[in-house]
Figure 1 (cartoon, helix red, strand yellow):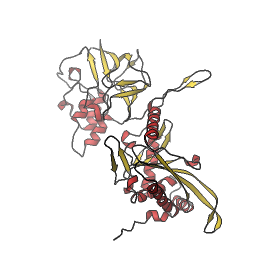
Figure 2 (cartoon, helix red, strand yellow):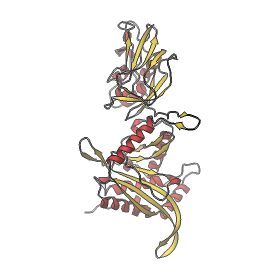
Figure 3 (cartoon, rainbow, N blue to C red):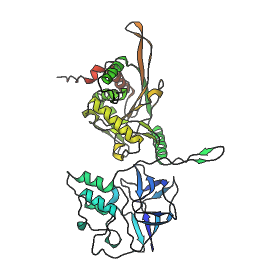
Length: 418
C-alpha cells in the first residue's frame, strides 16, 4: 500500500485558492475513482470534485467555509501499490497544472497496454480520442483526465463537443447545513451565500448608486400579454411581463449605449457593448443567481421568453454552467407578486445599471381627463452615478416607460434619420 496526496487543483482565471463548501467523504471511508468527494467554490465558479483514485481516505484538509490554497494538499488516500490517479479539474484548467502527487511513486514508465480508468476510456471514446496516441502523465504512464483535455481535437468543428465529453459540466453548489441548538441556530456563511454577501457589500460600498423610480401605466401591455397568451396552445407556457420589458429595454439601449457598459476598475476603462447580454436576477434555494440571456438583441419575443424560462429553471435546479451565469451587460430583476411599491436594486457589478419590476396593480388614476381604473406598475432602477448622469438615467427610464405604455412601438423598427 502507498499514500497518494491529491492537491487543490488550479481552477483557472487567476484563482489562488478555493473554499470548501461540503465534504462528501471522511477519513476511513472507502471511495472509488470518479466518486464525488468534495464541493469547492472560487470567486468564479462552483465545482464538484471527484476522487482521482480508488482507495481509503486517510485525511482531509479544511472544514466547510475554510479556504485551501491551490497546490496545497486537499485529501490523502491510501491506495494499492499499482493505484493511479485521474485528473479532477475542469477542462479550462486541467491541462495547466497537475492536481495531485503520489508519495511514494507507485510504478515506473507505462509499458504494454494503455493504462486508463473506465471513466477516462469512456470520455476518450465520446471525444473521439485514440488513447494509444495519448502520453499519460500519471504514475506508470496512466492517462489522466488532464491528458485527455490536452489531447482533444483542436478543430473548430469538434473542439467544444470534445471538451464537453472530456470535462463534463460545472455544477453549482448546494447550501451548507446549519448548526442547531435548543434555543438558537447558527448558519455558517459559506459557498454561494458568502459570495453573494461579498459581492453585494462590495457593490454597495464602491458604487455610488443613483436610484430612480417611475410609475408606468401597463394597461395596454397587459392587454397585449393576455392576447399573446390566448394565441398559444393551452399547455404552452404563458407570457409574463419580463420578456416584454427585455424587448423594450433592448430598443431603448440603442439610444442610451452608456448604460450597456461594464466598468473595468483595474484598467479604469468603460467597456461599451454593442450586443445586449441581459442578466435575469433569479431567486433560487441557494440564493440569488443571475443567468444571462446572451445576444438578446438578435432574438424575437418568444425566443427571449423561452430563454428566460430555460435559464431560470437551470439556475433553480443547480444545472446552470458558469458560462450561463456570467457576462451580463445589464440586469433586470423582478419580485413578481411580492414586488411591492418600489425597491432599490443593487447594481450587479461590473455593470452600471439595473432595472427592477414592481407589482402591477389596478387602481384609480386620472386618465385623459377622467378618473379610470388602470393597471399601474413601478419601475425601480439604479445606476452607477460615476458613469451615468442623473439626467441620462431619468431619460432612459422615461423612454422605457413610453414603450411599455405603448407596446406596439416595441416592435416597430426605429426610423433612421437621413
